[in-house]
Image (cartoon, rainbow, N blue to C red; front, side, top):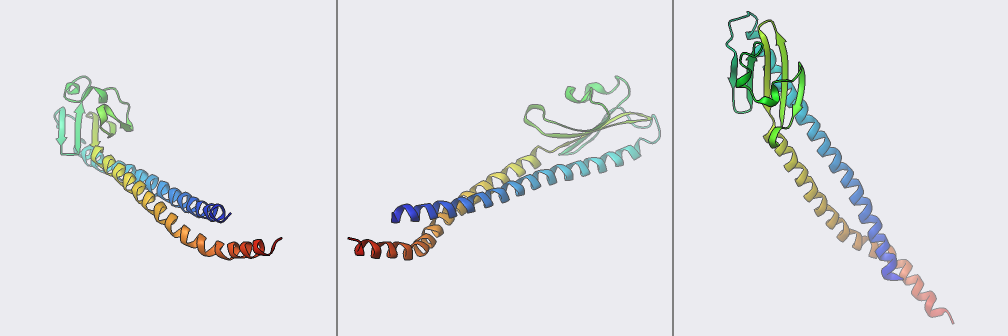
Length: 177
């Protein structure tokens, strides 16, 4: 009876800690993921607005690749002119904000129609997403460590909490015929 009651207390305390910490870890991961997407989209909108400001006067901007940086690339097309410079997956997107995943990458894309043609701006968020996944793995490892620590603490707590019941049971057992 002693091991059974103590074991049940240990399992109950450990399961409670595991559930609460698990929920907290999932919420933290989801928050980080949404925040990363929101920040990337904000950066995309900002860069798109800056490039749109440059295309105010039709015909001054060349078609093709306008801007290329480590995580940002922009293209201007006029009809079919300049389309060959951009990746095929981007050519038929409608105006708006998109998130696409070509060949293991994660791209946040803004497509805007202007008086001068169609502006397509891409933020390569692959490294940002990888950082979020590493954060998720870190949370998982921390969760496992905390659950193991909770199990050890629960054993001590269970021993203290159950000890009077065990002692009373032994006294009653000795007195019974």
